[in-house]
Length: 273
Image 1 (cartoon, rainbow, N blue to C red):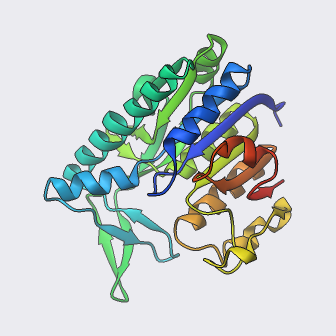
Image 2 (cartoon, rainbow, N blue to C red; image 1 turned 45 degrees about the vertical axis):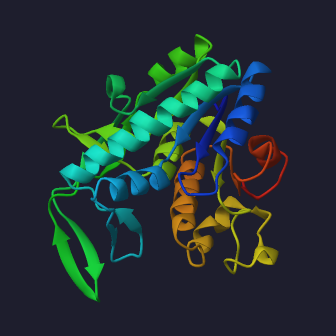
């Protein structure tokens, strides 16, 4: 297993409620103090709103195993790119630059940073019946160019990555932000992956915050998939993938508070190691 590097990967959840400004302030503070960091972000709320505004609201599919994802036909892909890469990524870079962090915005398309496999057909469950979907432009990441990210980090940049990847055929693909962050953390052999969301952490009985799990050994992370709800299920899956591939620890923590990254590193939320 490769030696872990002094890199912190932070995933900013794309759900409503996450305080992007607080995340940027905290990230800029850490970077200006010498911390090497990569930010990965979502943009579900912005993509949903843009789709509604354009008269093309989002549609979500559920796999037979219970995972939910955005149905991404060609028009939805255009909207997703506009919202996530054009709007969210640019706004984050703008805020970070204003705070003195030399942010570098890019997506997985740029320089083939992330390559993914697009499935020719996927299955979804609707009204208890399985359907085969053939025009979905989503993918599973197969490769991350760690050298490109290391080059940016060595030059003093703060990479800010939008969750898009390139298929073998050169197509833009929508990829899950949590899984993308896990793959980036794995490729960099990062010491820590922080996943910020609109919840205090992983709860055994969602949404009862008194059931918050403060720490979880990596050997038991698979058990958490049984009670994780909604988007949290993908975060737990991403955590499992990152930990099994050599990442030191994963923190799932609240992105709605001040100093969210620092608080996560100090033990707030759920730490899996």
